[in-house]
Amino acid sequence: MAASLSQARAAVVRDRVVQGMAQLLERGEELTFSSVAAAAGVPERTLYRHFPTRQALLSAAFDWGNQRIGFDGTLPSNAEQLAQLTRRAFPGFDAIAPVVRLLLFTAEGQAARLANKAQRQRAIVSLVRRELPGQGRTATRRIAAVLQLLTAAATWHALAEYWDMDGAEAAEASVLAAELILKGARARQRVERSARSSPTRRRERIKEERA
Image (spheres, rainbow, N blue to C red):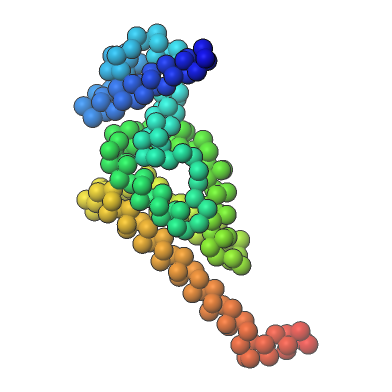
């Protein structure tokens, strides 16, 4: 019971701290431990106890952002789940835009975002292998990289900045691009398989084997 109460209090502090950070960012103010503590309404010593470094602050902001957009850490395993996550995440980014931009454009934010890079890479590669069985290793890696980029916060930001899209429209643009990439890859596979099985190609292979 004591541990649960302590965890609950810590969660309240973390939530207040990140919301305080968001308020400071919206006002264009500098993030310091004293300013964050004041905005959050907690003593500075309490802030240091929960977040001893600026990196710890940004990591908390990353976790808080995921919670706000409804991401529980479960990575998509197929194209439909990828589309669902994008449609949920991009509008969610609109609601916490200052925190998302902080994570995108600071060294500490980048470190927080890349903390589970290997896990995310494995998940998206696995997704591509499921959607495009038989795809070569290099092509799988390239397709996976582009799909991950399309569904990342950086794409949400770019579509907002260059095309004035809100999160909902940006999500639909991203989902459409992902669908077209997968559709094109499937079509290319069919063409390549057909070319390999054509009578002309079979005769060429027989000649190569006899030579």
